[in-house]
Amino acid sequence: MRDTTVAGLITREHRFQLPVDYTQPQGQTLEVFARELCDPERASERLPFLVFFQGGPGFAAVRPLSRSGWIDRALQEYRVLLLDQRGTGLSTPIHAEALASMSLPQQVAYLSQHRADNIVRDAEAIRQQLIGDAPWTILGQSFGGFCVLRYLSYAPESLTEAYITGGIPSLQRSADEVYQATFQRVADKNRAFFRRFPKAQGMADRIADYLDQHRVCLPDGERLTVERFQLLGLHLGVEEGPEALYYLLEQALLPTAAGEIINPLFLHGVMQMLDYDTNPLFSILHEPIYNQQRASDWAAHRVRQGLPQFCYQPGKPLCFTGEMIFPWMFEQFSRLRPLQPLAQALATKADWPELYDLDRLAVNPVPVAAAVYTDDMFVEYAYSEETLAQVANLNAWRTSEYEHNGIRMDGYRILDRLIKLNRGQHLR
Image 1 (tube, helix red, strand yellow):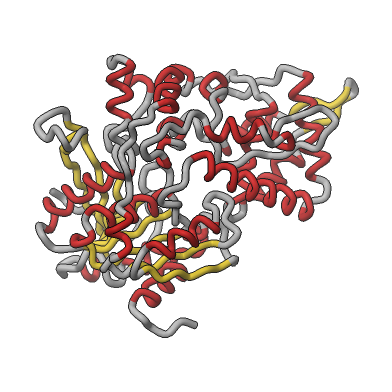
Image 2: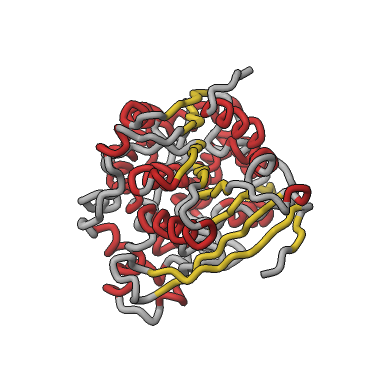
């Protein structure tokens, strides 16, 4: 196995053949990819590992372009392992073509093995292959926080320390309760956005009216509907997202002698800012990550129907939606369309196993430090507080300074503060 140098870092690629279903260890396997990073000046040292669980679900681990952010801080004392969670990146990725040879029941069984419980089982199998019985440290961002809490429930003896950024989920609440709360946070972000950019409401309304009255197609030939346009609200909850959305809106309509038309530059921007086609696992499993002994049954869609401000009506102010998945997306996004029967089957599946061991978490021995963003649009703060009260040895840094993806913008400071918090060091 050869080491290479990328972005000034020593890197090593690992590939592991692991069971799809850990209850059938001799059955079907899949490949899981992980990239190890090390400070070149410490390459000969036996440093402990820090494993990173990416947000999502359905997104590959970060591909570093430089030594910066949280990776720079971690490399001061760890080897970093960037894990492509099963189904993402180079880890037997999920897409329509890969599933085409399976029957629908086989697809459901296969995708059901791609939640946090099996992501953690993969990590445990990888740990044993890399370092045997030695423990390691884990860091989870967003959905990665779900994985951290699952790890603490499943194998706390394998962990030295744990860190969570922007991802303290409810341990027991249903998908309905999650979306009832987060829709309110999205409404808050809409109000803040339109207050900050007074012209934005008029721009958004004119764009929505135009899309309602004309058939507008994106560069890939897909129709841009009002509902699809509203999905851009996902960016209201991330660092620099409101700015990016405003700049997109302000150049959306071009004046002509015959009236306004849609700017092609705007259409390219919409495609770049909505990646549901390129990361289908995110859409397929977004609601099932919450499910424990119950079906989600398109929870976000049902909750939205009771919130008229999120349902476009001509002449009424447009309201953007957030990190929600709706059944019509499997009709309007071309790469999701073949997966519609699978998405429907997973939405109605009720026999999901429990993800968290509340009794074990109540006596958790592992030092855990979490950055909890009080204005988070994606994770309900009140539910995070419920979880904080249920997990022993968990220290929280509550802050309104960052949005959900704060670690991407100021990762060095955030991880450094969490390390100090975990170790009882002085904070400034």
